Image 1 (tube, helix red, strand yellow):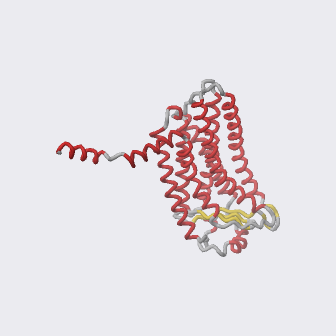
Image 2 (cartoon, helix red, strand yellow):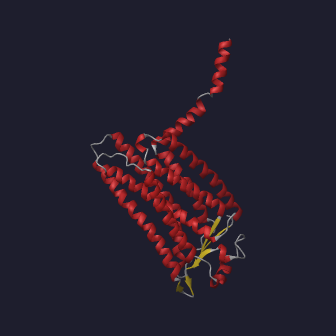
Image 3 (cartoon, rainbow, N blue to C red):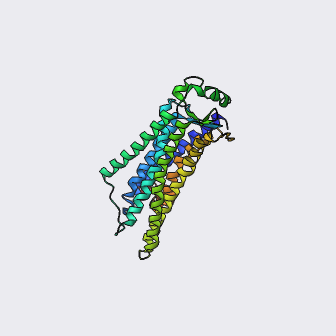
Amino acid sequence: MTTVAFRNAEHILFVIAMCLNLLALTLIFTKSSKEISQYRKLLVIFLISGIFFSVLHLILSPTCIMRENAFITYGSGWITDMRFIAVYYGVASMSFLILAMHFFYRAVVLGSETYTNVQIGFRRIVEIIVILVIELIIWTVLCAIFLCYKTEYAPTIARLTADLDDFPITNHDGRLLMFLGTIDGKLNLPPFLAIVSMILLCGVSLTVIVWSSIRVMSVLNAAQHRSSTWRKYNIQLFVALCLQFLGPLILLYLPCINFLLLPFVPGNPINAPHWLLSLFYSIYPIVDPVVMIVFIRDYRRGLYNMLRRAVFLPSSDHSVTAISTTATS
């Protein structure tokens, strides 16, 4: 795939992502039932983070290269500063933490004696935002300090990027977020430790997700005395949440971890296409609103009713005209 073709594909995916996220937000604010009134606040936070990620992706137009012992990311968009690319990766990291909060909330709700919604007030929302900002700062600092250009990288960069027509010729220090996994056959320790720290941060969120999932499943299995409607509704929310988890896992974390770790493998034979990771990141913001709309009953029915009214019911102007014509006759 040429650079122009994959940039055009990214722009199309951006438009689709924005439309779907705005549609999902509209449904959340207008079609949420009482049972989901508190949980929807977490859904809104997730969608807003996805919109922010999409906009940042469009502005930066990042290209990610993983070839031999090198990992390189550079921007070709309106902003090309590597510090903004570090922020971009930090925003991507927040999705796992937000999902961990979703899973934990469902576990807390189902773990309560009355199975009622747990209030998410203004103070709790502020606490959530503070935690997300802290993770964003940690990721950004790790990327900006330990994944930065060094003059000793220059010969390897020149050799591995000769075929890329949009690769920056100058100002590598300000534009490239990168590292070499090995130098002269030896492990490049500073970026390796930084990446291990990033993976451990994700591991904390993953631990919360696994624990919460086990808790939710055990409660649902034990609550046989509850009505079938209640069980079906909560199973539906849990399935939707699991699918929301698979989106960033498949499109963000697994590809990114492979791209980050393979350069440390001596003699790494894999040279990934320069458009692959960026294209995955473009698709990711589409997955979450689709899962919400399709698998959560409130929003599925809400969309169906909106479409039904738009397609089958006449507009108010048409109805008024028809009534006036009948009265005149």
